Length: 80
Image (tube, rainbow, N blue to C red; front, side, top):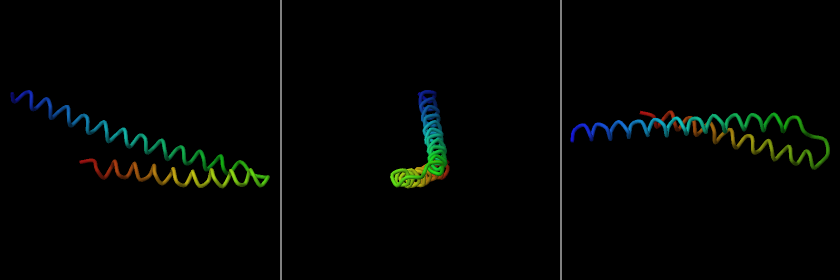
């Protein structure tokens, strides 16, 4: 019985570590996506419609960067 409880605790601990690293990985990917969108928005421009789409891309870039940073920070804070 004691071995079974120890095994379950080990499996639960591994699951928590994988969940935390998965959230961290998603956060890093969101940060990279935000940077790429920021670069793309800087490269486009010209006509009024292109300026409009550039503004939307820049806004999305900033929002995605913030969400990615928060996801990474929360994964580090909740890690015990």
